[in-house]
Length: 265
Image (cartoon, helix red, strand yellow):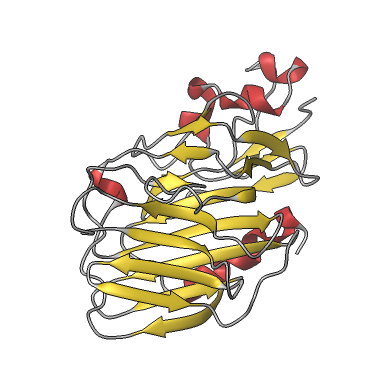
């Protein structure tokens, strides 16, 4: 049962919203409540849920914890349609999505998701390794213009990002372990492509490697790739965000420190 809700540093009067007094955390997902009060962070029963960061064009904080839609709190309306993935609640109170290899979240094709200057952040836990655990991708039809894949590589067990406009591949420098939470980060612009693990830059490549991932004929997907179904996630994914413009190195580090308590790392 929800006993205390703090929004923007102030306790919410539960008499003002009686459904919260007898309900559970998912009831906080009603648009009349969340759309007005989730923008600057919320504390529920003592657990801190991260605020929406400046520049976010997609932000999935993990609510509602039920149903076939995960609501975007970025004010861009990029809600995710869930197919197959199931809701799991961590001991911290955070709701995450669990994928079994053929599940997905369709984030849509809005142009706000695709840019020449952006970042992706997602927490993940892989059940097993030696497979391409797909985090986020977009694979438009046609001549590989705008494609990108962000995943755990099946051979190295390291984070890997691949862009096709122009062709660019970048690997992390440390293998991940199964059944362990990590924060994966990726940024791209006209001067570098950089990959982050737990807030630390693992690798980057300079030159004008990425001009755009814009080719919005096909949606941005979480957990699976449209063309290569073996690129799919078996494990959990949480707190997916897309930023435009790109985050700074310091912002990646700050996000990890702010959120690690939610995942016990």
